[in-house]
Structure formats: C-alpha cells, structure tokens
Length: 520
Ligand code: DLZ
Ligand code: SF4
Image: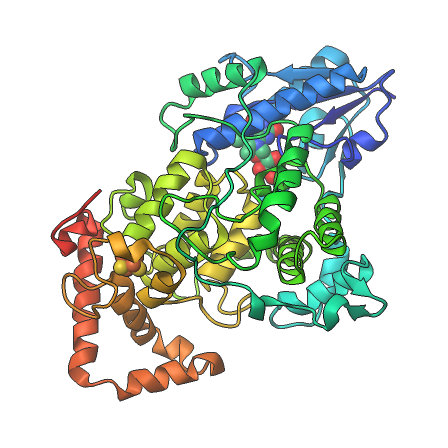
C-alpha cells in the first residue's frame, strides 16, 4: 500500500520508526516548512534557519538514496500553512492508503495529529518515538507510585540496563556520580578551544535568505550562522568535543566567563534534539574516550549523566505529567518578562552577557540558563508560562518536552518539588564564585542593600520571606530559614524595601535606573 510518511523538523534520522518500513518503490516522504510551526511561538531566527537547513539537507540525502520526497519550502507564501495542510496537499496529489508519522516531541502537536485521521479520512498511524533510550511505558513503570521523582536512581537503572560505565554490577571507579570533583570556578587565562564552525553552503544560504525575509520580526540574529546542518557535520562537532573539550568538561561545567559563550560544553543539544545525533552513539563516544585514557572519569560520567540521566528523565517526566504540567505555578508567580529579556539592556552584567549571547547564537549553557536567567526569574516572581515561552523561543535546542521540566520543574520550582528537592535560588555570591561577570557590573556583588547592591542579594532573601509558608518546612532550607530568623528587623525591612523598589521599576522601565550608571 502506498504510504505517506511525514517527517517532522526534529526527526531528521533514517532510524525514526516512520522511515523504518519505508518502501522506496511505493512510498512518499513528506516534509514541510510551515508558518504554524514557525510562529506558534516566534522562534529565534537562528533556530528556524538551523532546522530548515537541516531539513533540506536531510531531504536531499533521502532523495539521493532513491526515496521520493515531497518538500514544501517556506519561500512560497501560498504554500501550506500547517503540517496538516501539507499532508492534505501531498495526499491529494498522490492518493496514499495511509499516513505514518513518528510521535512528535510536543504535546501540542500530538493532540493535533491525533485529530488528523478524521480530517484526512484515511488511517493515520502514530508510531512511538524511538529517539530516546527509555520508552514512555518504561518511564511510567519506574515513576509509578513515587510522589516525587529524582533523576539519580533513574540514571543508575539506565546505566545498568545499557551497560554504560559499568564494571560488572558496579559503576566504573566505584562511584555512580563524580560531581564532587566537578564544578570548579573558572581560572583566569583559560584557553577555551574555538567551537566547530561550518560555512553555509548554497542550500543553507537559501534558507538564511528566506528566514531573513519572512522572519524579520523574530528574536535574534543570523549573522555568522555556522551551525552543523547535516549528520556528518554534527558527528564532526561531537568528535571535536570529545577530543578538545570533554577532558575539562567536568571541571568547568558550571563556570562562566564574560565573552566566552562556549566554554567546555559540547554544543550538541540542538543536533541530538533534531535527530542528527543519537543519544547512545554520543554516550558510547564519551565512554570510549574514558577507556582510551583520553578523558577523565569525572568529566565522562558527568557528561554521560546529562544525556543518559537528565535528558531521558525530563522527557519521561514531561509525557507523564502533560498536559497539567504546563499550568504548574506553585508560587503563583505572575510578573511579566522585563523588556531586557529581549533587548539585553540591563545593568546586571550576568544577565546582559547571557542574553546577548543568546541573541547572537541561540545558545547559552546550562548554568547560564539555570543560575542566571532561571534564578532571576524565580526570585523576581516571573510568570512560569512567560518564562517557558521565552526559553522555547530563544534556544536552538529547545522543544516543549525539554523546556517545561527544566524551566518549570528545575529553575522555577513551579511543580512544588516534584522534580527538584529545593528551589535553585541563589544570591550574587554564587554567580560571583562561578564567573567573572561581577567585575564589570553596574551593581556591586558585595553590597547587600541600597541602590548599588547586587539585586540577586536582596531578591534572594525577599523570595524566602515571601514564600515562607510554602518553603519553611523543606528540610533542605531549614538552616537558611534559621539564618533569616536571626536577622535584625531593620535588615529584613531593608530587604523588602530594596526588593519592592527594584521590582516596581522592573515593570515600569529598565531596572538599570536603580544602579545609576548603566554600561550597556
Ligand atoms: C520547531 C519547528 C519549526 C520552527 N518549524 C518546523 C516546520 O516548519 N516543520 C516541521 O516539520 N517542524 C518544525 N519544527 C519542529 C516541530 O515544531 C516539532 O516537530 C515539534 O515541536 C515537536 O517536537
Ligand atoms: Fe550579576 Fe549581581 Fe554579579 Fe552584577 S553583581 S554580575 S547582577 S551577580
């Protein structure tokens, strides 16, 4: 039977189940660049360009392998507006007996596709997404009966199941987790290797032109676009990471340096999440580097935990908890995003650095996302829906399945502790320890109160004061609340006054007015 096989923009692998049973003699692959996916949130220009360039290259590879592909390009304003429109058009032209698609990564799109059979009047088969190591059934069985979910035990099970860094039944080296050796502050004079870079070819240049033209009002820039856009290039990024960055990945995984966006991170999240790389091949590459003596165990274990542990964990949790998880708002936070989330114009250098590089590269690393942007959003009481949308828009690797647990669960504690055992709240001292941002800031990290004080300092205590009823019985925060209880009444008043002043101005205009001078 002629089968129409829809491949979504983040399913760019020959191994996706919708292509597994493809018969090139009869079947048709459909891919489509459509306005609805580009604007359901107005994604960063670079993210759209990356996906379209990768989609076009993938389609070209399929065609070169003898597969018939109908591909709708974004260039044509009269082209299909939605994925359903694209499938309808292709079906009308080719008369398939059924449609097959791999389950999408987002609840929104799955709910939509579940209605397609009725809309198309031919069978639509949705196959389970195989681009993860833990199936949704396996995850649900593991989570069953647990009130809160913790990644560490889930990770150990996957280590055993896939025999990753195992020595028989025991973890290699005797410990499951080597984080006590990781997470050092940055040393001055680190010679961070340059990231992989790929000059756009003719296909990518066409994409850059159409995104420039049709997405002019989207966030971000396309200047110097140099992402990998094929599987071969993504493999080269992985190889380069393993050779040049992985040895120091653990040491500096939480470190931040001004004007140094790439550090010792892998920069492969966007390729993994779009299907250009598979999780197990990435894990095995890192494991091999350890066994060959090319990278230390603390780095390799820490890196593998991000992919085998965290990535699988958040994806399982997302599907277990949707759709309710999207509305989680434990602290009932409602403040809209300040304008500087889009402009980068703030006197807070940590946020300015992070947002500037996000604008330029659609990339920031984990600690910039969690402890700078996420921490600020938590302390300032920004609306979880608005913060989730921002993350989904601005990062090239972002899809709802990965954003929602990381932002609502981890950064904002909006699920009340289902994913994290305590809020990741921190004052300026943490950012100062892990970065050199504070040296060049309109605020002073050592000051606790007043106009020039680092806002993280008083916002941190103000957050704890405001949410005492919800947090004070958390055992992990006991010491902090005891410190708060010992504070002089005037100090507590100062904190509240500083926070109120800052947050009021945040809504009205750039907070930099607080600091007097703004060096943006
Ligand atoms: C993110 C995205 C964008 C911007 N554009 C498209 C598109 O035009 N066509 C497409 O098939 N997929 C696109 N995607 C990815 C989908 O939104 C993605 O499949 C879902 O977000 C599920 O993870
Ligand atoms: Fe960020 Fe505060 Fe340091 Fe400025 S002083 S960079 S606001 S942590």
